[in-house]
Length: 164
Figure 1 (cartoon, one colour):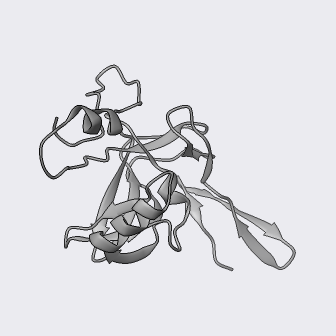
Figure 2 (cartoon, rainbow, N blue to C red):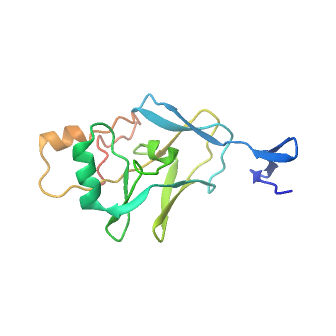
């Protein structure tokens, strides 16, 4: 029987002849923005939580899709210039919201990105990463408004951009 352990505790439930793994995170409405990811169980600092999944493609292709589809953007930039487009074959990791003081971080391994806890996270707490976005060209008021941060943290820098 395959066993899964979270925080040193067995997190499998017998179900007939099968073993069912308890979910640790879920997507639901966020007070910060749209949907967010939330802890269902205690999460320890350093735990790998989820892979950011989607189609690996070029920025150009992802940007063309964004222009033709209104709403949220689910694109995660890779260090080689490509992106993971979470709107194509993505999972709930695409609902991670930004915070200036995040409790999670993204770790890139090849063309894959994994989300890890930076701190201990209690059940019910929302999971956040620092988007650290970059823009091409000059900062305008429209761009400033478009990338305004809504995290509400006491040390909020007011922007989802990496440097303002």
